[in-house]
Amino acid sequence: MTTLIHSIVKPISTGNRYLGELADIIKLAFPMLVTQLGVSAVGFIDTMMAGHYSNTALAGTAVGSSIGFPCIIALNGVMMAVTPITAQLTGAGKLDEIGPMVRQALWLGLVFAALLFVVFGHMDTVLEMMKLNTEVISVVKGYLAGLSLGLPAAAGYFVLKSFVEGLGDTKPQMVISVITVAFNYMANDILIHGKFGFPELGGAGCGYASGLTFWVFFICILAYTLVNKRCKRTRLFSTLSLPSGKGLMEILRLGLPIGGTIFMECSIFACITLFIGVLGPVIVGGHQITLNYSGLVFALPLSIGMSITIRAGHAIGRKDPEAARFSCIMGCALAMGLSLLTLTFTRFFSHAIVAIYTKDPQVSAIAVALLNIGALYQVSDAIMTTSQGALRGYKDANMTLLLTFTAYWVITLPLGYVLAMTDLVVPAMGAKGFWLSLIAGLTISGLLLSSRLYRVSTNHIKNQYRKDLV
Image 1 (tube, rainbow, N blue to C red):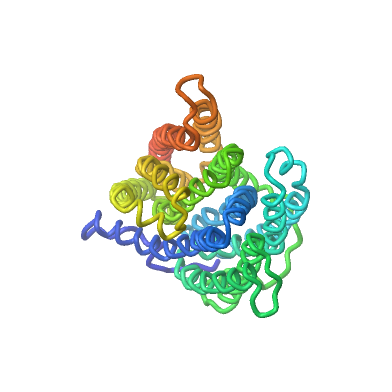
Image 2 (image 1 turned 135 degrees about the horizontal axis):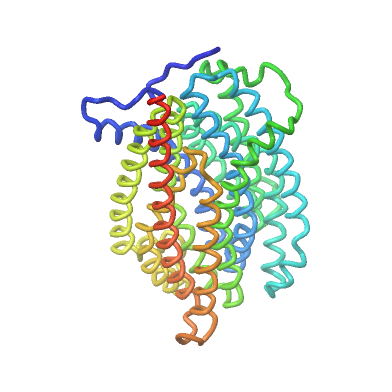
């Protein structure tokens, strides 16, 4: 059996336990933070450049991304099952079992990419039901068509990225994200404005640029896995494995709940955007700016949550559940502390933040008001996100799906609709009503998930204690 000795996999040091664990979490999280900011920067670039082109382009890009990216992020969620699977096998020293599982994930990713390609190409009925004007619909359809071209590459990238993460190596994706941000900016500039002989696509050009960017992501991560010694030890590309029912089901059992959870989180924002769409391009633009900035801030707890997945997975693999829980506690505490800092920053500099996106005074006023409200949920968001990441390390995903569904779709969306679109409780608040309901949903979700994490981690410690006594 092939074994892997790496500092990330080793138990935490006993010299200074707290600082040592924080250092290990940050060591994993920082490259993923840069990566997440890079991925978010793609959306930021789309929003900024479409906004400077026209309000119609901004609205079309907002709706198109609200339809397309939740699906792509859900695909990423399914493929994220590779991270805890790889992490636990790495912690146990079972590298020979990693390659076959990753190959099955690649097959699965291609299947999901094909399904999404069909869905994106048949959105006419949905767009008609949204009652958008014809110019915005044209931008949305063009955006989705361009995004569709990158779906196979996105699936392959998500699998290989999760595989490398599970090994405890997060630096490659950081370098790749820096490369792709620069590429995405250039592609947007060329395709939106029609430079160098290319047609002027307007807002639709953002979709084509994003599709091309996914191919750059995939090519870079593929090249890394082919040359990296640690990746080679898993013999990932040593043979061609045909799809296996057993292998696919193992990934789906973990991946579908993870993907479903992430899809519900993203789709709640998408649904809110669709509801707000009837209020006009100015309101949609202000909402989209707030949503995009929130996505940038979200990269902090998300990166810490992903690092906890790896730390907890390695500890569970080496049969050390106490170290796994300690990693979870320290990671959650770190994320909460940082969330207080980002909340303060957002409230003090909301006008300067919005000015980066747009100069339109009407859109700016809406965005500043929403940003000041949205900043309040960042602490709850940090608790929720890191708890999810920790539970993934334990391969606990089914209850997470149920709790997230309850918080978002049973509480947040109905409450938001009542506050924003009706006069049942208070005079219709518009976009503000939805953002207030998001604060309630995230708070409830954070409390439920942190309670679940406490129970799961305690049960693992008790079970390991019983085994040690035998």
